[in-house]
Length: 317
Image 1 (cartoon, helix red, strand yellow):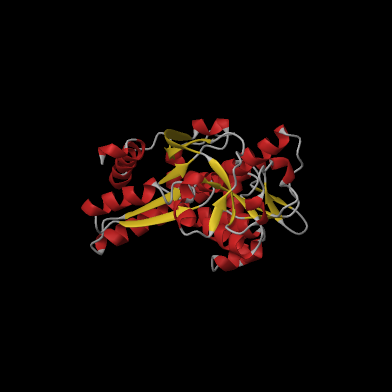
Image 2 (spheres, rainbow, N blue to C red):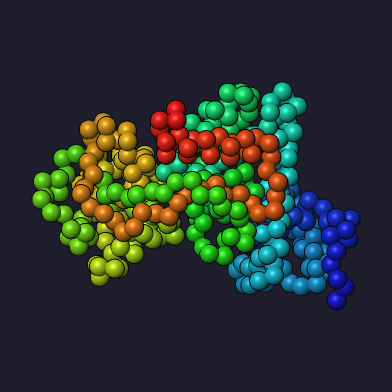
């Protein structure tokens, strides 16, 4: 088998090859993929044959009702997705600069960082880069890291969710995050003198999805006490949705203390006198390994460090 080389690949591969891989992976049907690319099905099939001939292995397994990526094919699709996202970012960045802007900064943030240090850091950055376009995606760490890997984000303020991820990403810790059980202000549990976690699984809960660090801390606390997970749950990563649901029902929610300053000040919510497991590990700045940071991204990192100092030492303001 002839050895692959990046020089040979650059001379041969076209963007249509990448597009077919991504479209076919998403829809698992050659006819649909061809339609998305405005090609005939025979033309799309030929592109796939050319790709498989070039790489020397089957990229998709032809099944009766679907085309499923092989193990090597899935890795090729992943790289194709990253390359296309990179191209899209290049076009967006150049177009913004042609129109007199200063590029775009795409940030991913867990809910704890979104209301705390991140807004102040962005405000400071915008003071000397007023025409920089900034976009913030608030999600759980597991979803944000996937977007960071696929170059849909420039950096993430969150946590690593698996030990092996230190091979992919650089992590700089910022702050740790205590968890609280939150209810509406007139919840029946407010009048209970001693609230035990073991008595709460009969209540409905609002929780993060199972893969999120916050949910894992909650489940670990239950397991340590031998308590079954609650059956009546709603899963969401949205802090705003969680707060609205709490007001409309006698539900319980696990939220980081950092997002509770304004809700508690409103008088509409209360925190139960209960500790849920250990505080979450430090969240921090996560970037792709071995990639130099764009200027605006590096400046935001500097502002985030400054905001952490001010958070830990308020007298420095």
